[in-house]
Image (cartoon, rainbow, N blue to C red):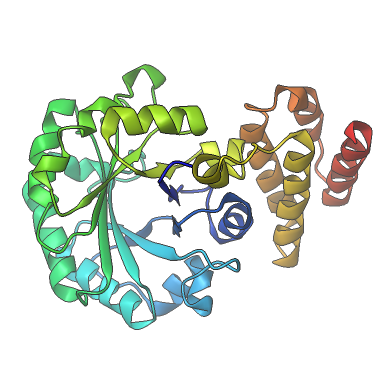
Length: 318
């Protein structure tokens, strides 16, 4: 087996606490990350952290024991540092600073700060100074704002002493998620700029084949998987242990598990169905036999009817 570490990415609107619970129980991930938590000019309230990272009540671990790292997003070094310290005080073992989010709803934060390396440096330094040396600090960036040639300067700005990991999504902010823009090879020469920091490769790692190609191109053995984890719920196990990717039946069983989890949280009927449809929308990309079922499932609004449809489909393919 390959000597990989595999992380479940922090995906806004996708990998929230209920889905982290489902995916980590199946994925054999070394660690997962919270969705980004916005920090403004006010220190993050404890109740906000507890609401978003419900695993804080379980030692910042999912039910299966996967560590959860808290990801912060913002532009105020002082309040970010104080917020990180609060997370640490409540038991967080790791903090991740988000300079990678390309959302148009994120303004002077996330990947918008890739245009301001000096501010990025100040934020990372403030975080490291505030945290205990044993608390892991990681930074997530993109390959640049407009050009991948910016990457070297970005790494130099954030590769301060005490940073443990830098995750690089191998596209620029301007390139968003365009498949043709991905270039893993830009990471190969980055290791020498940050010799004491683990470089984590991110971007379109969706199966064992892409993981191996990424490792060859980047010389990275720590990988971060995003939407591929929805296409293949046991993706970490596939990459690390050579497990067989989930078949159609296991995908449908995962849909039931997601619905049951959302139901247990007493969420509205629409939320239950929306999350199930969201998951299945990604999963059917690697399971084309489920495409027609997905189209019909999308028309269902009632959760009981939705579960019955999934169960009936399971009986059909059993």
